[in-house]
Length: 260
Image (cartoon, rainbow, N blue to C red; front, side):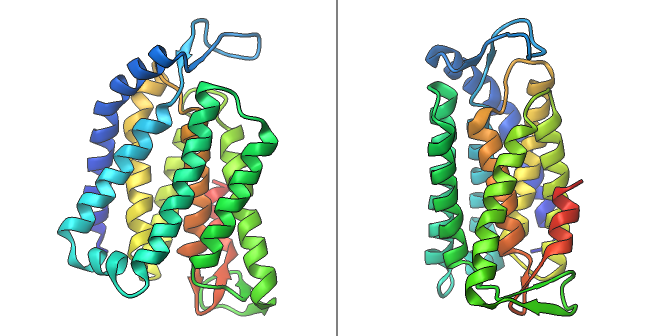
């Protein structure tokens, strides 16, 4: 994937989110998916949740359109083993999204959400290129830990990033702004490593979050768990799928990007 295509994907996702957000807001208000004012909140009026619906749909549409017009991206998705791998990862993302959306509309127990997140993370690790070692930077010295330990650590990493991003969704623009920066940073690294699908997804996510920000800053729509959980899950998954090189998972780029 080229930088130019990545930029187009990001712009398309941003525009789609910006247009879709008001429709999603109206829908959320009808469903009663609102964040009510309280002592710990900064808003004085009820604010619609489910902003993640606009972000996820816009990112998915942008990536789908790119697959249709770019032969290399289409080959990476539909080539040998590609459909099965990306189908499982897409299903895992969908599970996290549905759990988050359910929590936005009607509260879901934290333990239940965590179980679904761990199951989805394990599914991603199961179909991703299997890392057996950890390295600080791609191509650097690696620490061999075996085919069991590293995948378990990778699944726990995905679940940790998912919930860490969810915990930053406490003020306007914080979660979406930080996640957009992290997505851009990870996209740059995965693109440099020659990956194709991961940077496309990350650029779409970054663009969708940027398109969401104007609605968020006006306190008319929150990401909600439908947005923050999926965003964290995508960042965690992309840092695992996109940063495996030569059987080793590069931890420093992931830590720097997601800790920004």
